[in-house]
Image (cartoon, rainbow, N blue to C red):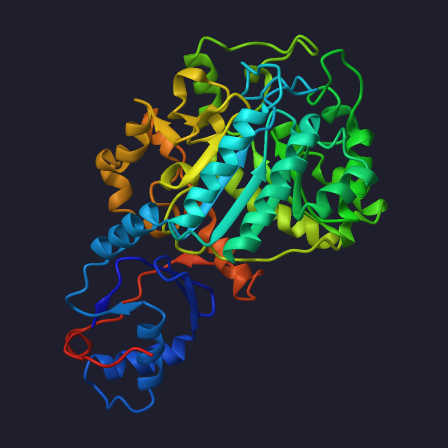
Length: 469
């Protein structure tokens, strides 16, 4: 046995070790006494009795691997297999790219009018049917936009078609919606639920006076409490996840925002997460590249007016925000990251974003950018175009630093779009906050941890072979 290349270790003041293996997503707490007993046996100074259980647990959790294991090759093989899998079809559908808001940081600077035509809807149904006929047995749909509630008839028609197809082929169906919430009512929430839409993501941009200068209709006017009503209406019929777009000004008043939500009783029925607006964010580059960097006519604000977060600030926020949530009795899960087989829909060959006009995209940040479309949806299926090659081949030039990073299994080099735009400064928050996250997940939130080196495999252990349970 040898040590995994994907081990992290920290130690508290009492000498207790906290381990995390990024490849297996496994954590382990090892007291100083237990480690001394293990090391004495592992180094050959004592018998393995009393240390064998520790040895086996370290192996079962992936901290020790077989001597001939090529962990990187195994990660890449799993990645390639998952990229090509047809078991699940993931489809983001924008039944319209129009929106009733004019948020200045929105990546869809080139939104276009119109709703999805009956022809494009029919081709979408044909595409799903062809996947089921070739063996796919799971369909995940996300209603997207634009603002999808502007095209409710298309959502109804396609939902009924998808549910009928899943029933016919014995396939699983999952549906969610990403909406700004301004048009959500109790009646619409009931309709969506009847079409098996079980989850909604709705965004807030801080307390009312912050939000109302960021998420605004084209003719101006406040939207915070209108969206809050929409959140409440949706939460009665589906799970609602509230996303908070957070720059530094918003972060400073997150406590007030959670207090407003809790006062409505929403802390008992919704989940909340923060999405830090970070520096060098790729959607800014995407719109600028297309010649569409702009200011919102409704607010006169532009992306550069945001006091965006850097990577370390975003990582700190990920920890402190959970503490705020607990204070207002929101549901919180101190989860450590799971190893990933793919990064996102752009990394999976059988995941597509279908625009209202029939354009096909591989990334929701490029929605509406005609030059970025990877194909067109036709009666015969998706006819691929030149841009599709870059998404297929992006891993061929993956950053060498990513391939040798201990965080690789939990991010796989992070975002393909950032990679293609040569933005390497976009590591996951866990790279910076892993000790704090590990302490919280293992019940040691108040412990002060420091990075540690914990040898696990001297010569005696390297000679061992046994069956991992």
